[in-house]
Amino acid sequence: MTLSEVSTCPKCSAPVPPSCDTCPKCGVIFAKVRQRPDQTPAEQVLGISSTVHVAGKPAALGIVAARLVFLALLAFYSFRILSNSIASNYVGETFLHLVNLPFHEAGHILFSPLGRFLLVAGGTIMQLLVPTVVAISFYLRRDRYAAAVGIWWVGESMADVAPYADDARAGELPLLGGVTGSEVEDYHDWEVMLGKLGLLSLDHSIGSFFFVTGGIIMTSAIVWGIMISFRHTQAVSD
Image (cartoon, rainbow, N blue to C red):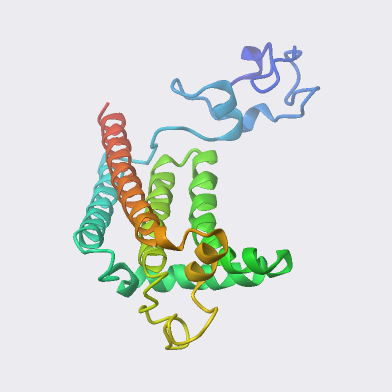
C-alpha cells in the first residue's frame, strides 16, 4: 500500500492527507497494513483472515492433512466412548478423564464460598465450563478449526459426566480416594445434588441426557471440523 493510495484510513475510515504515514485519528501505521484481495478492511488492519495462508501449497496441504488425521482420531475416540454403555463407565477409564478430573476438583474449591450445593455442583460446572471457554476463545479469534476441537471437548466432557450422574442411587462408581458413594455418606456429587432437588429417581434419565447430548456435540464438532478443513483445502488449491 502506497501513500498515494491512501485517501481514507482502512481501520476507521477517517480522511487521511497523502503525506501521512499514520492515521491522524486512530494512529494505525499504513505500512503495516497487510492487503490481500480476500481480506476485509478490518482483517487487513488486525492481520487476521478466515482462510489459511501458508507459504507454499505443499505446506498448506500438509497442515490440512494433519488436521483431518486428528479429526479421524477424535472420531475413533468418540466411537469407542459411544459404543459402550453408560454403566460400563468406559469414558471414565480413558485418558481424557484424567484431563477433566483436575478441572472438576478445582470447581469444588472455586465454588465453595457459594454454599454447600454449589460447592458440590461446582465440580460438574467447572468440568463443562473450561472446554466451553476454550471453544469460545478460539471462535472469537477466528480459529474455526480449533473452536471445533474445543466444542468436541465440551461433548466429551458431557459424556464423561454421564456415568457419575447415572450412578447417583447405586453409588457403585469408585470415586477420588478409592471409595464409592455407598461407602461414604454425603460424598457422591450427584447423589447430593439430585437428593437436595428431589430428583434422585431421575438419575438414569439425567445420565442418558448427558451421554446422548455429548455424543451429538462430539459428532457435530467433527463434521464441522471436516467441513472447515476441506474449505481450507479448496482455498489453498485456488
